[in-house]
Length: 286
Image 1 (cartoon, rainbow, N blue to C red):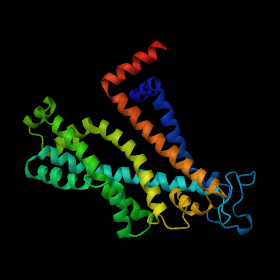
Image 2 (cartoon, helix red, strand yellow; image 1 turned 180 degrees about the vertical axis):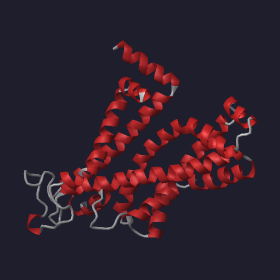
Image 3 (cartoon, one colour; image 1 turned 90 degrees about the vertical axis):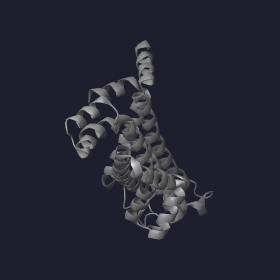
Image 4 (cartoon, rainbow, N blue to C red; image 1 turned 135 degrees about the vertical axis):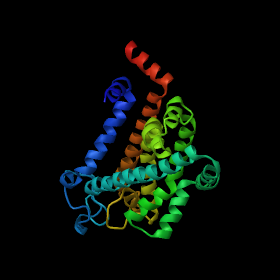
């Protein structure tokens, strides 16, 4: 907690990014209470209304309240982002850590064949292919994004374990008879979590953007479940006569992706000893 407090005191960018990220998560959690109406309730006489006191962000082509749909869309995006980061992080961390520690043919198989094969294709194209094969649905979107996202975590974990397993504390634990599983879980993993945390924070932004892309293409969440990407897809025909339908979900995607990317950048700068020293000196000089 002291490290977090120091990070928030010294990094202005980190404070703003963390506050914005927490605000997005709180809005997603409290959407049922904050939303002024049912996000799926249709009201055709009020279709395509501009933002007003009654409908703060206007209504869509079916008369549904855009503010309510944006808030509930945040729930979908945050749920997908957290689920993908946890799932891909656990799978990638386990595979990469074991490969880096064991070495030999297993390391060659994981690094040269599996990781390079997944990283050689653009992640979003693989996600589209898997999502199209599995079919629409939030569970299938999460599964498709985990399948395409684990390789980055695995490569990072493998590189960190290759470096850390030669440290003195690991050699001491091995000489005392500690099993490989104990060395990995008790000694190596706690010491490689910092770069994994940075990767996870940036991966959160990538997962939100990927879910919006899949929903925009029609292979994401199933209608009428509100999703920012699906809202953009539905508003393509009303770009000029009802621009608010494009503006608000696009702003929501931009703010969410920007918040988590900035938080990841701030964490990465803070964990770099040279950049941390610079941040401390500049904060003291003010």
